[in-house]
Amino acid sequence: MIIPQQLHNDACRVCTHAENELIHVDCVSHVYPDGSLGIHGMCFKVLEKEIVALCGPNGSGKSTLIEHLNGLLRPSSGSVTVMGKNIDLSHAHIWREVGIVFQRSDDQLFAPTVLDDVMFGPINMGASLEQARETAMEALKAVGAENLSDKMPSYLSGGQKRLVSIAGVLAMKPRVIAMDEPTSDLDPLHAEMVENIILNLKNNLGISVVIATHDLDMAARISDRICIVKEGSIIAEGKPSSIFYDKNLIEMSGLRQPKVAQIYEGITKNLGVDMENCPITADELVKTIASMIRQN
Ligand SMILES: Nc1ncnc2c1ncn2[C@@H]1O[C@H](COP(=O)(O)OP(=O)(O)O)[C@@H](O)[C@H]1O
Ligand SMILES: [Mg+2]
Image (cartoon, rainbow, N blue to C red):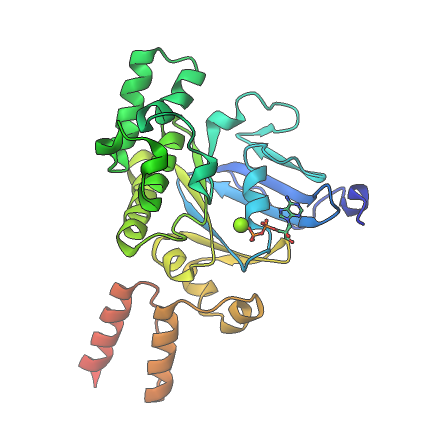
């Protein structure tokens, strides 16, 4: 059994502050009521207008960290600051700033119709029925699910439920949206839709997105920054091109390199040439291989 106070480092020596940070998780540890350690000495930040991926195997602490970002879970030690405010001291508006899309959409959808569900957030924030309906329809449109507005959530497919869950969070117009395993259990079409929605949230709406995933192929395609989570802490972070080409780091973290990195490493090894680039998307890989062929 771990006593929370024993975990606390008064001054975190690892965390650095960035000027454009929206969320700062400062050396947070969380012990669940049964004594299990969820995260330990976790230092993490979310910057303005970025997609940051938390990549780690099952049980590494991704969901526990995500639930700290809007106060659903409170640190046993350490602190979380959102838009410069300590969550413990000022809790009231945090859920407006940071929305969470849960891994299981059934945990999130509860109203009789999709539209009612997505209107719930705006109404709770004081919008009139008419305003709430308009905001909800905009959010549904942004995820390509406006045609589902009259349906009963329980009759939707898994992919449709995921889109509606995202719309429900988006309707509250948060600055940050955290998504727990956003593409797990989805067919390729819906997984691609969700990837495009994440990119759209950042590029067109200026929302920062945190994704927790062990799908490194997806993380490689869309993330600006990768954080490798192992045994409750972030053990490495950086650009996808530097993190995903560190084979030892990825494998000792219980993960596997994205396919693009595996293929490029395999080809250069096979040809006996140095790796000159670090392609991360399929498109970059194609261009790199085409240029290798042209040079020969
Ligand atoms: N409600 C809970 N009660 C007790 N232990 C938990 C609970 N939720 C998660 N844990 C434990 O916390 C650790 C981190 O879990 P989690 O954050 O769910 O990891 P991930 O999302 O990376 O799979 C695991 O050891 C897990 O067993
Ligand atoms: Mg999880």
